Length: 120
Image (tube, rainbow, N blue to C red):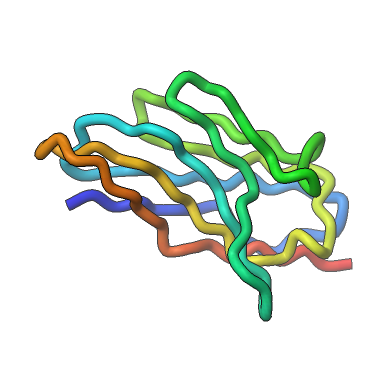
């Protein structure tokens, strides 16, 4: 069974940095796009950043220049380096990935979420 496990969330002061990690495990044949989403209280889940299997990246405007997404193919892991954090970045952050199982079917998977809280 495939699963995504996130780590790295926590409490940080405004202007600080955090690095999120998300590792995929299980019976994996391959991984397509990976990404990070976030959901703040009372708001809908929104895209933060994505990265393709070839390394092309995409960011929502509010995090451009502050966040960097990267991945390690050998470890089936995606990272989100978050710098110059703002209070409005406070949210639960979710990892997402399109994963090909050993049955050669592609399915979307979500992590359990990790809380990021930025204090003023």
